[in-house]
Image (cartoon, rainbow over the protein chains, first blue to last red):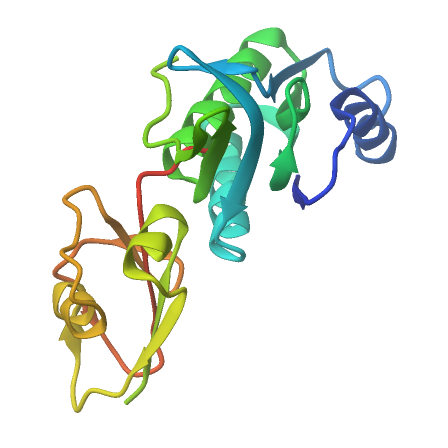
Length: 144
Length: 76
């Protein structure tokens, strides 16, 4: 299990492949489900130029680890990985990766969804958008 | 006793500081800590943490605690 906060751009596909090579025993998993969230260039009807992501160092990692532990106790999964960006980013930049490895697809799909939904509601990150008209904090997450 | 208080994101900007230190004589609720730290009214949707665990506004902070106030989270 790994939780990483990156201040610089990352490649989620490369990160997933690297993690699998390093940590997942070949031949033992039959499923890997992943979610990648990336930056949109629009929100609430406005064009968004850049996004700045702030977090609470320490508490963020603690909650991401807690969420991974919960997923491992609820589903029969082998391993999971969460990577989340902080700092300034641009449209199309990956923001978050959640990935889960398991023997069968059901647990991988369900646990991956759980990691993402819990991250969005509990992990202390905050987004600030730069628009043509200036800056604004994002005050709520979308439902799904 | 010493309590460290941290503000994040829009609350940090609204309050005008990232961190404060209080030295009360005894334990204080987070509501009282907010009032001692800033004249700004606490927004209804403010979330609180003590030592990096979510708690409610009535939680009593103790010596050495790190208290944090922040708006609803918007990661992912």
